Length: 166
Image (cartoon, rainbow, N blue to C red; front, side, top):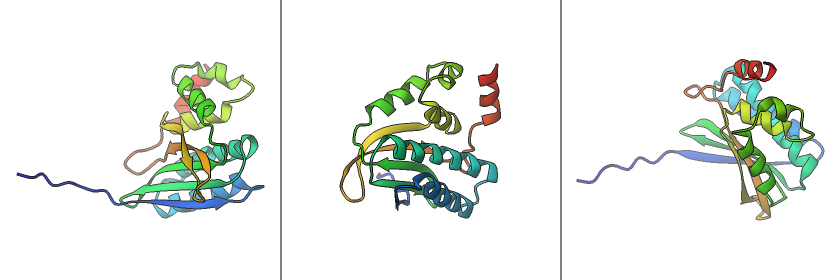
């Protein structure tokens, strides 16, 4: 007897982001997508903050092309990525890996990496960096994080923030 194979209906929306306002564009697009999906306002705010951090990092530390990719599964936005034109992802990947065992308070006082710490916490440690290609075929890197959904709420950032201050 053959078991049925369930295929999910998924879609990836890719938006090019123009240098000079990458973070603003990414926040605006993601907010609209999440609001249209009925995601709670506080979760939209957290996701918007996370994508803004990643987009600002991309524009500060990498080169164009810049892109925003949002993956939806069965009509629900589930993952968000910022793509930049620097194909070297190892430094960002190491920072994200180290955050799983690092003392968050120590990380807040480092010269760099605080934006990634924020994304790490807002996504419940569901974030990663990897090598990819831009929509134009340019070798690139992606930094991606899980989006809050109705069935998978964002982590309690108030609790996380309290743990940083104690």
